[in-house]
Image 1: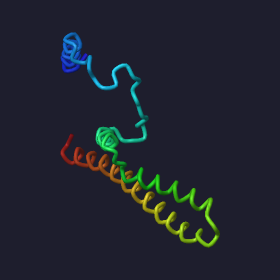
Image 2: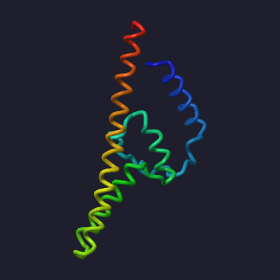
Image 3: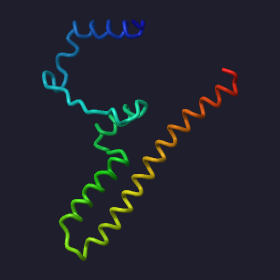
Image 4: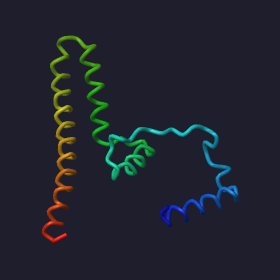
Length: 122
């Protein structure tokens, strides 16, 4: 086992014995765990902080707007449908470009480090 894990677990045990965890909010209630497998590991902490602050990431806000526009289109009159469809198309394009940019950046970052390592002789 890693020495830092051992030290951390020891500190947690000591704090529990001293009763430092006895008055925590939501004690005895189930944890609200969310599935973050779709979020890259390096962004999960930031997403959690934003979520706790009530702020949605840009792609989630766009997804929410897309769903809302789709529901509006499904229940609107024919004369309103054209303008809503144009808004929906714009939001979907923006979402797709954002996701493509993130995927491209992640792929290029991985590839870039391999090039640097190769050039450095590692």
